[in-house]
Image: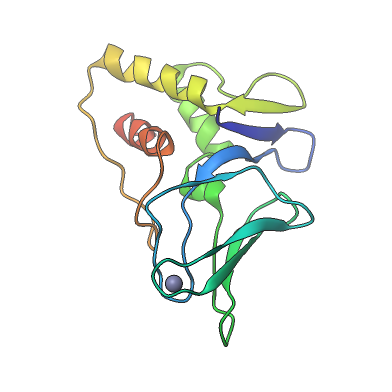
Length: 165
Ligand SMILES: [Zn+2]
C-alpha cells in the first residue's frame, strides 16, 4: 500500500511520503540500483544505508526526521551527496494531487485536517478516467538526474501526463 500524509492545518497544506518505494542513487559513482527500497520515514533522520554494488562506497540515507528531502551521502573523501524531494519527483505534492483531482472532478485528498492519501486508489481513479476518455498512453518524461521510477509511481506519472495534468 502506498500512502502519503496530508495536513491542511498549516500555513500551507502539504503532503509528504509515509510509505512508498524509492529509487536509490550512489552519489560517488551515480550508480542507480535496479531495485526499489521501501521508504517509511526515518528514526531521528536516519533512513538506512547500503553498499554501492558498482563502486563499493557505503551510502547513508537520511531525511529531515520523516520530512523531505531524502539525502544520500557516500562515505568517501569529500562526502558527495545527492538528494531528492520524492514528493516532487513522483508528483505527489499537494498541488499535483489537487490538479489530478480537478481532472477527475473529485478530490483525491480526503476531507479533514490531517490524514492519509491512498495513492493506489487515486491511481485507479485516474486509470478509469483515461479508459473512459479512451486516451492513448503517454509516457511521462522524468526530471534530470532521475533514470527510473518504481511501479506504481511510474504508472502514476504516466497517468497524470496522459490526462494532461
Ligand atoms: Zn557507487
